[in-house]
Image (cartoon, rainbow, N blue to C red; front, side, top):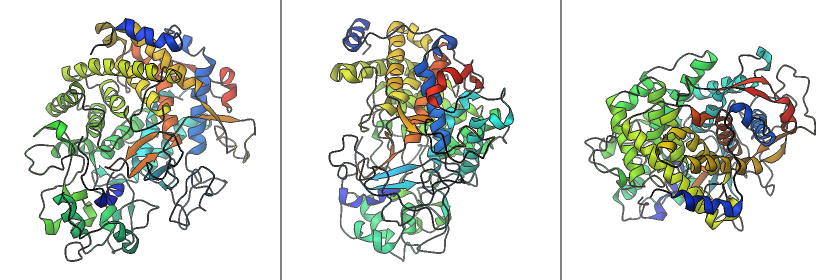
Amino acid sequence: MARPANQRHQWHLLLSLPVVLGSACFLATVSKAAEPKHLPASTEERLESDALKTAIMGALLFLDDTQIRQRHGLHDPRFDACSGDGCLPLVPGTGQALPLPLPFTNNRKGEWANFIHIFPDVLSPHNAENESIIQIQDSNMFMTTAITYPLYLFDETGLPEGKRSVTDIRRQAVDSIRSYQHEESFTFWPRLAGSSSDKERVGPLNIPMKAGSLQNVFPSRRKTSNDNYSTWSTDLFNPAINPYGVDALANIPADADDTALAASTLELAAAFDGADRPSPSLTEGLLKWRDLGRVREDGRDTWKGQDSGGFLTWLKDENVPREDRFMTPETGVIPLGVNNVDCVVNANALLALGLQGLGDSAVVGDVSALMAKAVEQHSWPECGLYYPQRMIFPYSLTRAYRDGGIRTPAMKSAMRRLLFDLLREQRDLAASSPKHAGAFSGGADPTYDLATGLALAGLLNIGEGIAAEAGVLVDYQKALVAAVDYLTSHQEKVQIKFGTTFNRDNDRFLFPNPKDKARKWDSGVFFSASNWKLAQWRSDSYTAAIVLEALAKYALAYEQSDDSLLNGPRLRVVSYGRNADDASKQLILTK
């Protein structure tokens, strides 16, 4: 994937988001580290594993404990609701977020904390995980939809209303998601009052949009080799063309990714929690923004070719005169004035179309063929322009195939090829780093837990039927067990912060029992600015949610079925625990 040529003019990208594997060789490689155990066949057999139940209960506790709510809490912006003047900043030197340059941090109820890591390659000295010393807490809808999704794998209808903790988490998240809707689409960031003008805008809660603080790092009059950068940056600070000032820098339009993810989550909320169904116009609106007959290109998505038929990222017309591109701030400003095609965005759009019953449309066939092209020519490790995490495309595309029910011939072909790719990825990592046997590499993400969770979910979505047809069923089954063993052996104990966590029927418990523990995993990189080195998003809660999805699907023996999420198996809850260490006895789940 081509990268923007001039690094001096890329500050705005921080804000512009928004081969067949031989079985003998594979088995020999894995056996050097540890021979994988036999794959239990049923949910009952798999849930006999104390490590698996501990990880599932631990992740649920962590997500409940860290969802941002109005509590009698610690006034910590990572989990206490902050508005108005915001919460007090976190203490530098603690290994937590450093919310510079703001004295206070704001957030929104129903979401989970996530942090923008600024220049992680430069500002992470002696840090193998590339965590920047400057981190800014962010509020965005993408995070909330992504974390909420796996929670729909749990069925609490057999519990009393006051005991339905996961349902309550989902409902609060959905309320937050709906607040990002603007007409018939959704935005990545919330809508805010203008700071350099009186016009409403979209933007980050905790990054100040002040001309004096940003213009110095955005050299508007220097010439570059990229006309888009040079023209756009010059126009941004030209009041005759942009009378709204630096608000335009982060005022990104509604996009296909967030609109698709919101539609998918709201569809699940309607199916399982009795919420109102989302309007079909959410996904139907995506159909008009496609890569057809375009004359503008930004040079970063050449993998697709011309007139690919793929969905465009930004839901706004890019064919406007230069003097008009900043003149409708209420509809957002396309970064650099040029749209693009992101393969992860397209996979998420397929999921939404499938869940809303549009999987048989001609457009789905066209986009499925484009996704198969990305897999066949092995463009997928980099065709996610905003996703440096290597395993997020296999996760997203297999989710559209399985959970969204997108079963076109092109998609099935893509699943077979992705299966071989994933098996090879796991094998190669085990060969190069035996201590990571069973895990997957995140590529630009130097951690392994998030990538392994994404890849394991992807393998389960593909299913054993395709593995059997491809002649690699034994290798496939061993890969599942190895990945599960890696994730369950890398869970980290964390103290539960609130006495009401998984105890919602009794608000008297303001403080937790010191013995009560949840579980977390390393927070990997899941999202980035267009230039991956400028800014990257991380979240402990997102990683916990992805690991939860992978392990819950494993517990369900998800690979043995081919039903969509709306019609497929879910984990029926009989009882929960309030301490992950007691999950072996207290957590009771059935299929």
